[in-house]
Length: 292
Image (tube, rainbow, N blue to C red):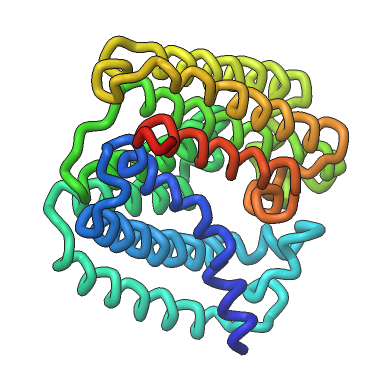
């Protein structure tokens, strides 16, 4: 049962909430305990909020997931966990979530509420509307970054927000591309209706635009006068190749191996991607905090 609830809460998907740490990394306070603890609180709260939303989404989609070749193995559509038990779990998480909000500031709470409302609306309506579905996913990641900035009361660069938006758009549309590759025409309507509004050509074009947006916005962030002034260095531009490689690697994994549907699995299992993320993080810390 523990394993089933682990899957119901989608604990591996918590890796997406690491976006909460982005403002801390670029705030010059990464090694200060108070700032780190506050961000850790924000991360954990977003993890619980994400699990709450996943449960609600799975309850809503139980019939559609039962027709999906992979999602039918999830605890709810497979019958390993009943609907009633899932509702009880969601209520318990919601209560814990509300209690934890007393530990953070109002600005963070507002971003979290926006995150929850957005994702509930996504589960009910937005995911059925072409293009708006992937924009909703992008907005969710952006709210994580804004929440991470709010919880430690630091400003966040507009370029970083744009980079976050484009990278989440990229991941969202690549997920749609992967679903299109794996589904037959008969399955599209029974699993995710909005997929019938997409095509492989259309998703390829959106992915290309989004990938270019990520690279351009991040590159401009590294060389912007505000960035250079704050960090006292122009060397952040040397982290750009890691971002470019990561985007290209993800595209390779999807277009040639059809692995783009599960971003978390890629981030946790693909060795070149893991090495790229580690090298990017290490290089960024060395440059920003001048650790030589």
